[in-house]
Length: 117
Image 1 (tube, rainbow, N blue to C red):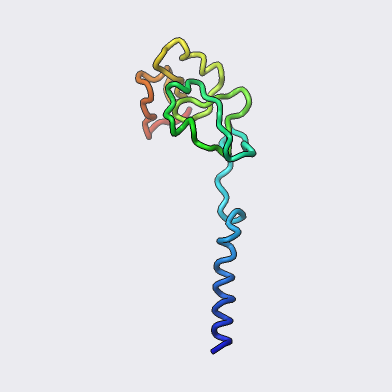
Image 2: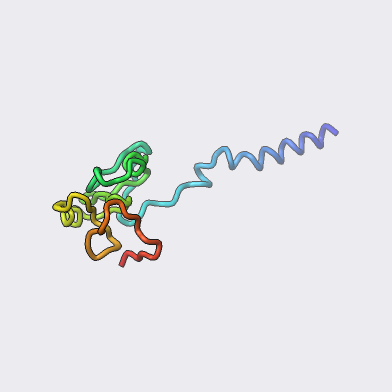
């Protein structure tokens, strides 16, 4: 009876150990091609139009931030500073990489069929 309990404990330990050291087994996906690791999970990113960006997007802790020379748009995508400037003269628009021009409405979500080509 005692050996069965001991065997059960060993089996449970073998099953649970990988879960307690999950950082090796359950890592988040790598950064996007326009991002770099932040080195600090509490780091905030730079935004093109923070006044048009939802608060939850602005305050989101990021493991990855936009590469140098890039900023985030209101939808959380990295864009160049030149792309950001294209919409600065519109008070209610931000640059969207999935449209040929600036979005028509402030904070309008990107369609799910959008392809970033």
